[in-house]
Amino acid sequence: MHKASDLMNEIGGVFQPKKIYSLKYSQVLQRIGELKRAARVKECGSFLEFGLYDDETVRLSHANFCSDPLCPQCAKRKSLKVFSQVAAVTEKLQSEYVFLFVTLTVKNPTGDELGETCDLLYKSYQRLVDVKRMKFIKGAFRALEITVNRNTMPITYHPHLHCIWAVEKSYFDNDYLPQKELSALWAQALGVKYTPIVDIRLCRNKGFTVNGKVYTKSIKSAVAEVAKYAVKASDYLAGTDDQNEEVVKTLLSVLRNRRMFAFTGIMRAVRQELKLDEIETGDLIHVEADEKPTSAVLVAKLVFSWDSKLGEYVHTGTEIVEEEQNESRTA
Ligand SMILES: [Zn+2]
Image 1 (cartoon, rainbow, N blue to C red):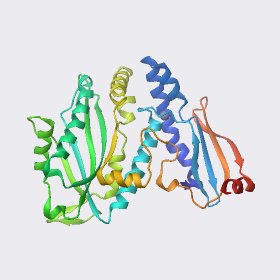
Image 2 (image 1 turned 60 degrees about the horizontal axis):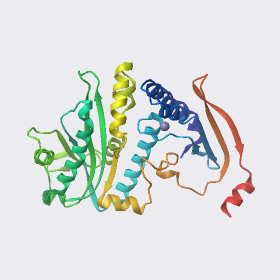
Image 3 (image 1 turned 45 degrees about the vertical axis):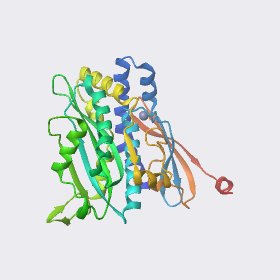
Image 4 (image 1 turned 90 degrees about the vertical axis):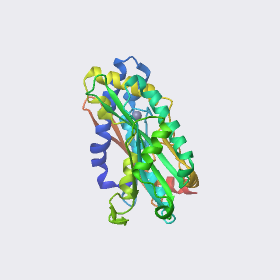
């Protein structure tokens, strides 16, 4: 839900650049012979309908999103959805739990090794949280992120997990886990001899102090970090044609059958209680928690369409919603 006065900025500043990136992605797909996929992505978000309400807010009400795992327009929608879901879940648990923001990494694989490395990350994560020392984790959200090092020969990838762990407030007295110990446990779970880079910190509002150490990470910034979508369009669309083709092929094959987000334990339970739908396969139109129906009355529908000649969205229609329509809808 946004202020009606911001709508043009949102279309020009958010939907439009993503749409341009999606078209670029569609061209890469075409070149690598993924023709059906290319056609679907090309049409993504070519039509956007916003509901205008009598409290001067607007909400996206219809759109044709493609749901492709690498589509930049859809990635933006999914990351808004992750942000609002994780924010809603942590808010609900905030009075009873504190949250740790954790990053777990592994040595950078090449494209050929990326799939098995992602599987290793998932399996090792399960092994890690299953050890007795880690039973202080009462709930978790984890997200896979893969960044690309385009300038190595061959191209290498940096798959890693961002997690938010819900722990009891007694964590600092009873279960405190230093970074070094986490690194050792993570190496054990991965079954590797090297010391993997990990990061663990408390998410609290700025200035929170424990054992003389001041924590600066706020819950919101941690949530924003996990909400970044698994892959950044700039990683697979900003290189040379050859690089883009290679990276798109690799990422598509890896992301095709893997879940990028998971909620477990108490965070999963709250998510179910809040009736939040699936991030990857669910609704990409109503993605923000504050988009739930309010008492505001729908007054008009504003339609924007992608004009491929102009390369921008144009306002193509306004439908005034008659009062009777609203009444019959609420009846
Ligand atoms: Zn899309």
